Image 1 (cartoon, rainbow, N blue to C red):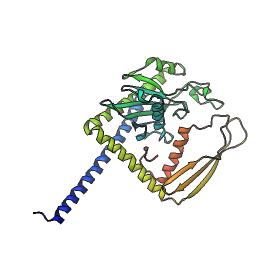
Image 2: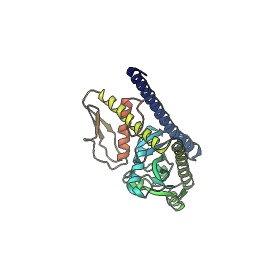
Image 3: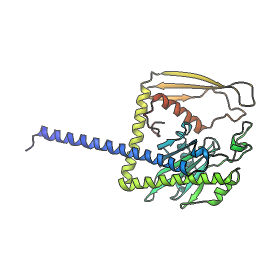
Image 4: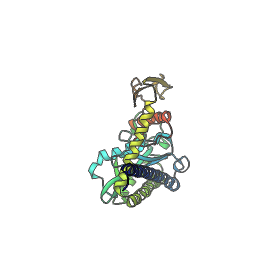
Length: 327
């Protein structure tokens, strides 16, 4: 008969082995999710017509969970690092339970989850056995989206309508097929409709590749295991972020920067940021920043949040995962 102390040692050893195996499995799944985002980016880079996509890589691709929280992402440029989640949450807010398998959605409205009008987001839900598990999202800067200036950068603009076509969260595919009338309506209002249409299809294609890879992962591991891995990934990123914040001395940190002008006024434009650290919490407050100006320098909420998150993450460390737990 095995002595009690030996039996306890065996059980403890088995628990440790099981825990180590679980950590390794979650790390493998996290790496797989990152690989899916990278593959989406490669598909987009190699299939798009616009040099802004193919050469400047002015885009981001990523995976969000069923609630719109960013799980994994590839950022071509930092300002898009956490912006995809805003597009997904805007789609969820608009369509809710009406999201169906085979759908895809488009959005660029800065007041509904967008950055600025040339950055168009495509959002594709991923269902497994009728259950919504993920969203694949790609957001990319298009060469022209209409408006009063070629390229849709108009330094003389005084309202959003002068900058291009404004797209709220809108279904652009149903049952796996693109809605050609929606594509045509959007492309018709731009100076290079063929390129815009082609690049939107490239974004939709990149999302489809991501969706196929996610479904393969779920088929291999099961939906419950993948959900648990995603939840653990977000929890660990949040825990690491809180530990790094807690290492910063408590206090209030302030900085002020100024922009020369907005193209209309002679006065300098003040941007004030106050960062308050309290324990493992950090608050970024822009109170004291000048009110919106007449020119096109005003910043939408999604971009403001993303810019603040980038600055915080650069301070906290490059090893913090760029997902909803960390940002």
